[in-house]
Amino acid sequence: MFENLTDKFERAFKVLKGQGQITEINVAETLKEVRRALLDADVSYKTAKEFADRVKEKALGQQVLTAVSPGQLLVKITHDELKALMGGEHSDIQYQGNPGIVLMSGLQGSGKTTFSGKLANYLKTKKGKKVLLVACDIYRPAAIDQLHVVGESIGVEVFSQRENNNAVEIVTRAIEYARNNGFNVVIIDTAGRLAIDEEMMTEIENVQKAVKPTETLFVVDAMTGQDAVNTAKTFHDRLNFDGVVLTKLDGDTRGGAALSIRSEVQKPIKFVGTGEKMDALDVFYPDRMASRILGMGDVVSLVERAQEQFDEEQALRLEKRIKKDQFDFNDFLEQIAQIKKMGSVKDLLGMLPGMGKMKDLDINEDAFKHIEAIIRSMTPKERSNPGLLNGSRKTRIANGSGRSVEEVNRLLKQFDQTRQMMKMLTNKSQMAGMMKQANQMKAMRR
Image 1: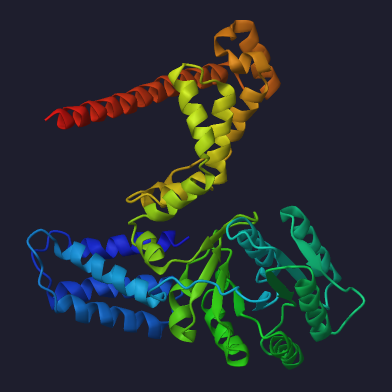
Image 2 (image 1 turned 90 degrees about the vertical axis):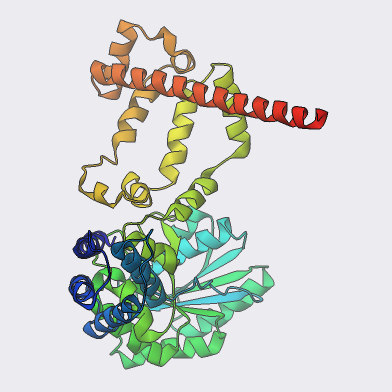
């Protein structure tokens, strides 16, 4: 997401490269490119112009320090303004109550049902809540079936009444059921509606009045661009929603909705969806998104993802095995599984500073599949003892995995290098710890 915008911002800032100072002329030239980049990303002209004007005003009033180049200073100012444009501070979802009630709204096909499942999974796994999903699309039986499938996949109960065509009755009974059965949060998946459909807009207004949700979210497909902003304004006039959810940000989107929707409706973006899987959901942080747009990476989010998959007991067990030179292909498979849980390789690279240019590389997201196929074609004994793999065994493994013998040999070489490197790192860490203890003992003797 935002790859084209990032590239254009980088080109815009090159105008100031080598300049000794910020002047009205070179800033105007740079911001002309910035404004053009925003317009190309489908940001409204009004928002793009106001943004460029604010950056120019702040830039011309700044004194450039000796240690900071004009380009660096303008990047800093642009980062701060992008952050402000997208809401400034992170805004949490409100789900407290007895139970907390989250109401979904949005157009048909915006991804409400999928997001409802993702949010339920997030609240269950990350917040430890008992969640009830409510199927309130009385117009599409398939939508009820879809929500039941989603609920089953994440282990969350779904409340539905297929024979009932009164949305207000369904949600009222669902809330009562939730209270009687100890649910902490109720997520109501409503029917997709057109903003011009007066009857359906009145229906969701009545649902909102009946349940008085702790949070009303407007779910919007980021690929609809500027139309998403216009639709958000119409829905906000009727529902006064609390926050926005951008779905399909992993698709071919220019990102304009994320940059202008906040300034148009004055409501924060709370989540972004980045895939179809139930864990492909990111909490929206304006400062982190601004950093990613400017090619500065998002190390904080990368570390958080790693920590979510980090198992301390497993890490200690792995460290002991490495020290004893017992690291085998079973351990290797576990490490691959943890990396895969963190997300796509391309997405992870995008979180590293300066790695935005990696988008042009042909990164094979299925590379792990080939490795896993080779390892799973080994016998349990071979996985535990890679030294057993002679020529005939390698041929059998290659045939079983559908790969070549050369690929099997390459994996064995990479595995051996990985094992040696991990052993070296563990020994260095151990030596550093011993040195630290020795220094502490010296200090105590003094």
